[in-house]
Image 1 (tube, helix red, strand yellow):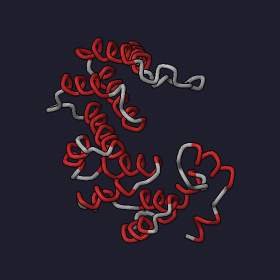
Image 2 (tube, rainbow, N blue to C red):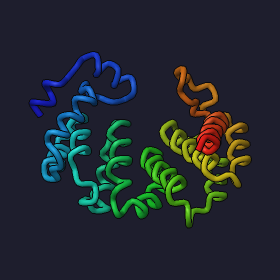
Image 3 (tube, rainbow, N blue to C red):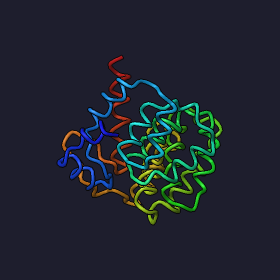
Image 4 (cartoon, one colour):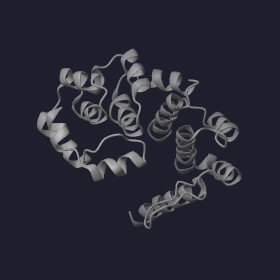
Length: 218
């Protein structure tokens, strides 16, 4: 904890707090510290229990993702107060855990929109990597009905799922683009030069073009 405190940078904290993250540790330095510590599950659990955001990010980097029980991960997600801890927990731990599918189903139906956003993030992962067994048309039905009025974090996760369906599944692409155009979610989102807009129709079109270019040059 003393070492983490020594890495505190007021400028980094200022930037992070604009995104809802209450820590000031440079993530490159945090990853370097994790690399030195290597995997330590007991230490990870102790770091998590502190409730400190930087300590929890470090815990995620040094834990053993498959070692957590389902209820432990459920409790951890509900305790993950900041966006970065939430995102890292889902992407670096839950996705690699044997209970990921069970949690995906449970979280997607959770009344808490932040918890539900984790379920949608796991669904997006399945759309991309293991779509067998998913009812993509039904997912599009839910997105069409609920995304427009969803709270920010949940809306972002649903939009990512919409784009992933459109990118990876040609048979649903026209409908995914149509839903994106009609709902216009994130249409005016500020996008840095060289980055792809999160507006689903633009995102889908851009990624499909890239895939086609790669196939053409292969």
